[in-house]
Length: 252
Image (cartoon, rainbow, N blue to C red; front, side):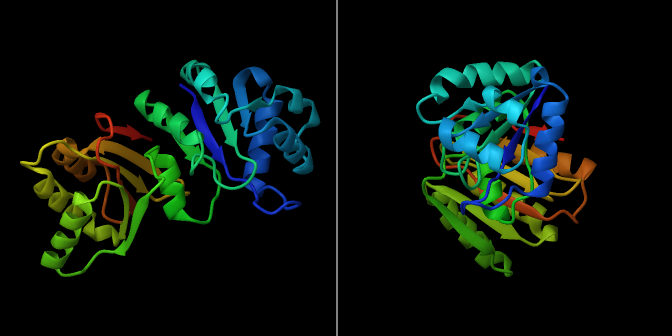
């Protein structure tokens, strides 16, 4: 099984690619084009950017344009390559791939096929968690730390659960299980469900992603008790209403 890597690129013209991403792409090309796919957003801008970053020029002819016009045709091919063990690198003309662009659909498809998704260093954890979730996020609500008092926290979560858009939550690591328990109580007895994406320790060696349905929260809590501790920084993303059901899966 391969992996999908999101490669954030500078927004301003003339800036260089982050060093970890640059090293990764060079090594990937040196290992041979048969083991990797390199996806860019638009042919002209993507090729010029690749050369500007000092990446191997001989790789330019192998770059594949993955965008709004090509995604429908290319998505099955890319997923098949990942399932066969290839590593796929996704870049945009500027910014974070899979955030407000067709890459989100590719990330979603990776989750459906239990394919690991990662990203090279990116300084905004909220946007990164949204991109890694694969959830639609044309509209989303960001909530910083939830209220400390239990009843106020429960009321806030109930309000977010009623909203149809994607919701992003941050809080202290030791409150994770309490928040999950409240979400379980909120979801019980309600028609339908919500999908939830949990990003643990983003951009660290211990990074882990969990994608699950609100129907599976109790199983997830047991998984967390068995394998993890309460020291993990987390971002919790509640998917929008109406998102197709998917059983929870772990990416290690």
